[in-house]
Length: 61
Image (cartoon, rainbow, N blue to C red):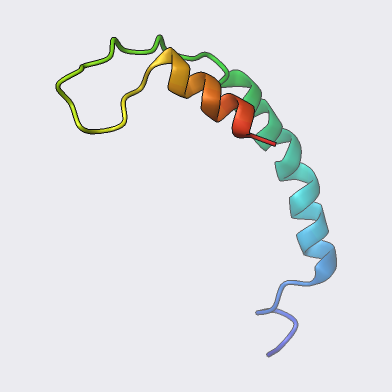
């Protein structure tokens, strides 16, 4: 491979340095959460309730 077709480490670091702040802004802007749905006792599937959301939030690290 020649130098023109292969990206260098320096190019990667430049790109990583500019995209990291943009990704952080995108994550910070999307922090609004929708309200959990009412549970359906007839359903066999896992449901989106406040209890399941609290569990998933506590399981993150």
